[in-house]
Image 1 (cartoon, rainbow, N blue to C red):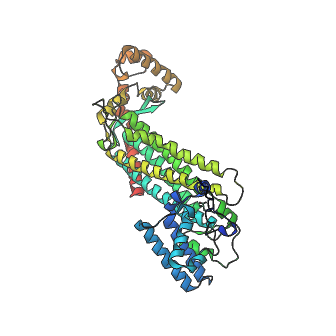
Image 2 (cartoon, rainbow, N blue to C red):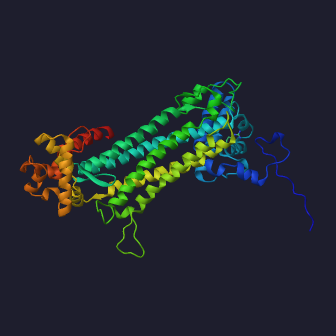
Image 3 (tube, helix red, strand yellow):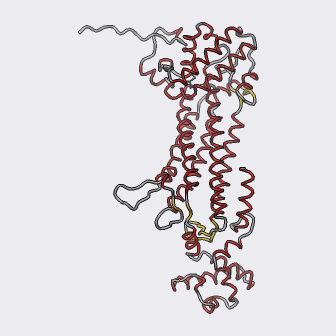
Length: 468
Ligand code: ARG
């Protein structure tokens, strides 16, 4: 066999001027981001349209070149959306894929589009636009989820259930109160995405590679065209900042943590031991061996997905940590993490909306459980303070001895006779039985933010106004 000398791959058309040969195949595999950043095509074309219009308005480009670019970019957009565009790994990323195709379509003017900009500001502009949309989508999805919890709260504002601390029965609460806790929690998530969006809404475009440009560009104009509030004030900061992605991931992580907490409650509540809720067939699966099973798979997976989202957050923090100014290629590792986290979060939010909307609370089981485990012991102690004037510590002690007595007898507090109750303290009268019921217990907790149905209804009304 004769060894044919391999001709080296040709140098890159976009930046290969000083290169005698093209990159090794492994280099291309390491370097290319097109497999994932093609997702930014719409943002890339929008950014280029804004840049080209500005170059024409400032006289840097002729109107005829700008027109050719504008029309060429629209063709590229329709090719990508129509599925006929051929993406090339050799062209590395979405930015060079679009520009190379533009060159094929319109020739020489395509080469003028990159005047006064660099891939460094271009890439981060595209990415900011994409993450900004995700903040909006996440906030909207969160509001749908809030509405689903709100509907549950309204339906069961006065249904009683056990409230837990340490997952041990603590005091009776209302179903509505429990649901509204999530409405509040999710409101903070909405706030985090909204805050992050406001902070990230500055334009990096025109920072060029890192130092700005000598061309008389108008960064206010491109910022405005892309719906940014203003251009970023420091070009080094503009190309090297990924705080916006980290803020998005942080907000997503906290949100996913919230979803995992309710998912865990659903897993517990839907078990045969609890039967607090029935999940719909749409969000559960059966077992191929145990015919009775209805497994809360969606809830379990939502409980687990926080792992991916938090993982993406840690990954990007690790990439960014210790990077000197300004741009480093490390930063190309930002996108896959954010894409996966955003997709996962949106899927989880949609899944949770479906589960919360569909779930049926088992009112009777909730009520039965609400009274178990001496859940009104605090009400008894409070009654001793109020009606008999005992110091709380003494009332606590007397109640404790009654709980022990009931436990020995295997009954509930309200099942003890008056004589038995009086053995703990002589001041106890028949009237005490009224506070031993779970409905009286929850109705009495009227302090602001408390579990009383009246409080819950007031919160539901307030949130209905907010969410419309
Ligand atoms: N694909 C790159 C990224 O996402 C674009 C920027 C490349 N810039 C450069 N100077 N090589 O970060």
